[in-house]
Image (cartoon, rainbow, N blue to C red; front, side, top):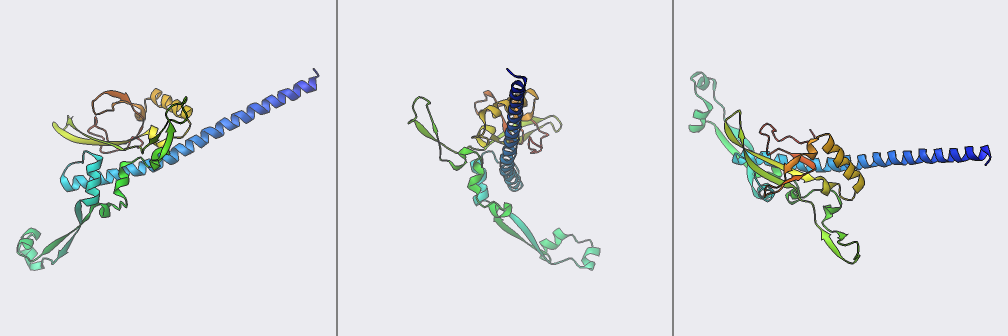
Length: 249
């Protein structure tokens, strides 16, 4: 074989490797961009739930323990919007040592509480949507998948991924009391559904290897069986110092 032909083949092979490498890098970038875009949407939903939980705690003194109860509070519960104050203490009354509490009791100052629905206070247009993972193939609640690769006619409906919300009493070593902790989570399998399964598998392996908190072994089921879990989460049922932080923060 002539040297020029061999050189030509080498050039073609080199170009092929360059193109393959470029396509692989492009594929990784596209995957990472799509992953970041989806996580942004899910984080917004989780932060919406966090706002609702904080409002619930302000109203009742503790966090809500189920997503359905929290949605009912947002839809139907009343919370304080503002307090309107009428009247002021005069200089003479202040010099005499009169307090605002005394002035209210005597009717000198009046306070009216304005109540609104939690949905209006929080600016949540569709409280029912809080229950669902907002993105992924399952998000519309109607995506169909084959149940058997051997029977193409066997199909079933995949419903929306559900936000998991749980509540638990955890002993606080600093206060020597029990704290009622809450956490809510969106599974990676739901919001990344439809993306490259191979890349998702590799990503999980990397997260686990680096001991990232998105890949911790957790008490994942109500029956307390331990299972591996990946996804986005706010709160931590095992950490009294979490302060409702997200595991991406």
